[in-house]
Each structure stands twice: as C-alpha cells, then as structure tokens.
Length: 125
Image (tube, rainbow, N blue to C red; front, side):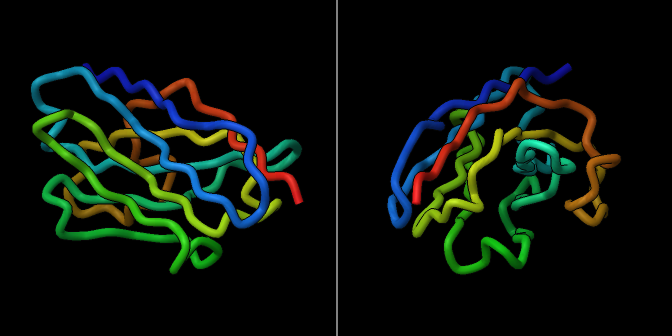
C-alpha cells in the first residue's frame, strides 16, 4: 500500500515557477514509477510527466517539454515536479500517482495503482 500527498500548488502569474512535491508512505516506494497528471475544469485528466523507479527513464508531455522537470529522491520518498515558464493553460489540479508496472508507457492512467488527492495550480495571465 502506498499513500501519496501532493503539495506546492498555488496561484502564480504567467512566467513564474512552482515546484510540486509528492510525498509517499511505504517502504517500497523506491520501486514504483511515479507520474504527474493534471485535470483542468471540463477536461480529461492528462499525463504531464513520469519517472521510473531509478530515475533513469522519464516521460514528458509535448506541452511541457523544456519547461517542466521531474525528479525523485527515494531516500526521502518524494518526487518533484519543477514547473518553469508557467502559462495560463497549465492551470489545473495536479495529481501524482504510483505504478508498480516496470515496462509500461508511463503515460496511461490505467497503469497507475495509487493516486494522491491533488493540488491546485492556477496561473494568471
């Protein structure tokens, strides 16, 4: 069982930066792929970024490539999402999720076993 808690969201202006954190409980967290998803009002939840258990493999959605960076510190059971050059269209609730799948696509919601409650990110233009 893995429990995930997101933090770091807030209200910022376009061009600003935020760093989201996903803190996990569970001794085996280091063996999970972790992904960040977001859901804007009226839209489906979409994959933003993901990182493998070792950090050796990452995925980024085209919309955030070059602006967002995912990283993890397994000693602290925490995954981070550094978000730079934020845009109004980045406004959404951001969720982190954990997957036990080793060779998945990393981007499909169906691959993830555990989800956090989400943190709101609002970017004003």
